[in-house]
Every structure is written in structure tokens, then in C-alpha cells.
Image (cartoon, rainbow, N blue to C red; front, top):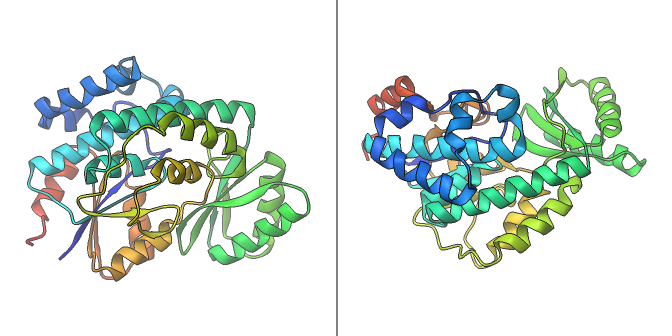
Length: 313
């Protein structure tokens, strides 16, 4: 049996998340929160526990908040004897995956997240956009329709290739509106607007990518201790020498999550543990792969359930 740890992406946050996880690992939790405050310059945990859903949804807050809870979930899982042979993350989840795999230290992870969140928040305000989830249409069809609309002058693109039945599109509000009509006409069951004011993983994030690359160029990205799967290429990443450029590209490139999951299954992974708030990725695994196990860890109950199902290697 081979286990992969998956790390949650933006949009999975909710108020008071992670409280029970911290209680299970007070010493390790203190180390994580101390690094967070030192690098970020403010108390992210106070915002996570006391902030409103609206406050937590702000990009500059949600990214370090989800990253923090994902690391708490990782530490809690390891404290119960769970381990992995590979990691992957959805969008910002790749940064927790890099810390889990030893590509980045805890402090380097927070430094990268701080720069990423600030750059993307700034770009979102400078270039407002929108995103929507397309349900029930093959990704190839979504890509084709977006390309046609983009060619006609309204910007929209396939941003997250999440599962065989779900693709998230990003672009200008006009581009999203036109795409929604075209996608429904082609048979999409639903096109659901997302509660964001930016077009993540699209060309509207180009300024953020450039700012981020300059900010993290001096960080030393190390070779991973376990297999690391990349959103950008949709398979295992084996070259780690130019990671600042790759992670900058990641900001305005599609998340190829379906390809990643299929690559992991082909590499023998049959157990997937989602670490962080929510269970979106657990759902994507079940919609994409057959004959695998998928569980999530976000609180005491899910930690206990995952520990009970711990695979025997």
C-alpha cells in the first residue's frame, strides 16, 4: 500500500478551523504558530479563531490561514503514526506539501506564502476578475469553449482541472458570463459562480507571478524526501533547480489536479489523506479514481477516524 498526503487549497477556510488539531499537538503547534507570527508579522491564529468568514476569505489572510491549519493537520497525523510516500497540494496547498516533503523549511514555507498572498491580493485588486465551477462537462469541452470566447476578445480560461466532472474557469466578469451561457448550451449541468473577486490561475495574475518570483528567488528549494506531484505539469516533479520560476508560473497556470491524481494512481498510490480544512480534495479523489481509499483530517474526530484506518506498510 502507498499513501499520499494531499493539502487543501484556497476556499476551504472557515472560522475557528484547526482548534482541535492544535489541542492534540500543543508543543509542535506552538512551534508552527511561533514561526507564523515571526514571518508574517501578526497573529494569524487569532484571526483564524476569531475572524469572520468574510475576513478569512481575503486572499492575504486565507492563504497563510489554510497553510497553518494544513501544517497542524500534518503534525497531528504524524503524531498518530501516519506517514506517506508522496505529497500533492491543490494550488496554495502545494506549499504545505513542500514543507511536508522537506523542499522548504517551516520558516521558508511561511516566507513564500507571505509573499504569494500579498502579491496575489494586490493583483486581484488591480485586475478584478471572477471564477466559476463548471459541473458535468468534460474538461476538453470546457477548454475548447473558453479558447473560442478568448479568441473573440473576452478573457476566460480553464483554471482548475479538478475532476472528470468539474472544471473551474477564471477570467473577466464579461468572459465568465459569456462562457457560462455557452457552457450551459453545450450541456453543462451547472455553472456555479465562486465567492472570489479575482481570476486565480489565469493571465490576470501575471503581475503577482512576477512580483512573487523576485521575492522568493533567494529561497533554497531542496530535493524532496518523498515523491512530489506538481499542479503545473500534472505529474511527479523531479527537477527542483528552478523552483522560483516554476512556482511563479504556478500562479497564472492551470491546476492540473486530475492529471496529478491519475499519475499518482499509476505510480501505485491507493490511499489518500487530505490534510487541512474541509474535504474538497477527498471528494475529487472519489470522483476521479476507482479502488482507492480517501480520508480527510481537519479536527479531532477525523484525526481519530484516519488513525483507525491507518494502512499497514
